[in-house]
Image (cartoon, rainbow, N blue to C red; front, side, top):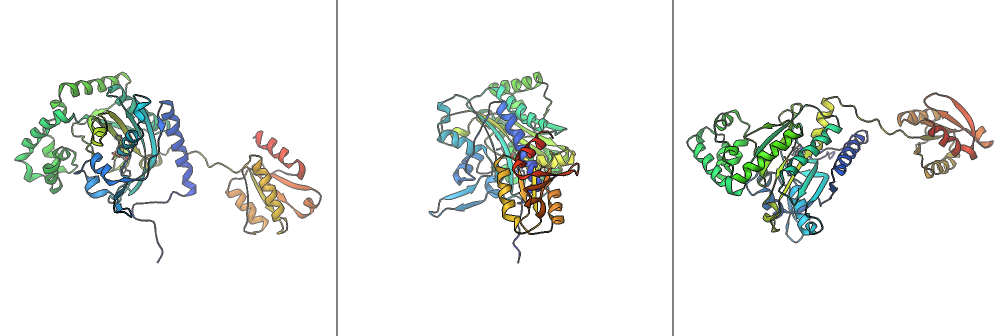
Length: 422
Ligand code: HAM
């Protein structure tokens, strides 16, 4: 039986890879401009990192992690997200010693054992930003602005920012108590998952998308009206800086996000083009995460976006993708004996810095020309028997269809001047 890719994963084929290069280039271009430096952490970590970082009762930790033992029986997990690993790397490498505020970004695969559906995969790619070492609300806004600029540079339109504050350890305790009291006599109307959430993490009930739960939640006390003085001020400043930059947002009092490390600012960027899985990115502040991981108290804020979802939206919005990079020269031969000479010529052209290829399958000249067309060759070199004996090759311009004989010794000069003048 043929073995397919595992459920929820996909191949990125050569015809699509240029989309990925394009997106990754734009991410790097924008984030370097904002002063973020790239970090690459391992694809797997000790499971404990995610249990402590993301939260024991979250869906990710209870249901969605790919967890396996190493040979000594220590539990490892394929990273389901990038924030806990980046904070771990920040602490482990003492990155805070050299600068008080550390600005990092990453691009990489994440793994969640979710039920696959449109826009939801088991292996997916995120680009993410993390700023570690400052509580300043300006940075929350910088993170949002940088994320928006990446989307904008890629041409994504009609995105909406949902914004909320989930408070801090201090004010959340009182709020959760209030919320529990509010839900208590309405529990029987909640879905079974929410009854569970109510017991383990009542805040997550606010996030339920089911109509029956939404009806109840609509009237629930709002977290933003129950913030402590410090959190209220922080939220007001975030809002005021967003207004200053004319960044539009909607306050969503029910937005709590699926990871437990959030404090104060929480936000999501959504697109109408994504259906049920409408979040193209999300983030927020995590001022207690470093401490949770046994580090010194160090505030942080960040964001991550799903690249597959960005591609879906870009396709739906009919955003033009950059063209395939064409190949400069395609070398063809009319006889088997010329193959080795053709290959040497090919290498000479490549050594000169031009992109060049040939057909190794021994097809006719006609089929070689077809391949040259398919790979978008700008020029084709035809090594005919007669011409070659006279030290000549035929150089064909594939766009104008003009062809002429060229001295083999002078070929590189001819090629570079033709390609430079294009
Ligand atoms: P998250 O909301 O879990 O946040 O994921 C961020 C984005 O990753 C989502 O908005 C979505 O675009 C994409 N995503 C998530 N799960 C899937 C999936 N199964 N298939 C396809 N795309 C998916 C985080 O991961 C946080 N670490 C973000 C953050 C950074 N918070 C602070 N810093």
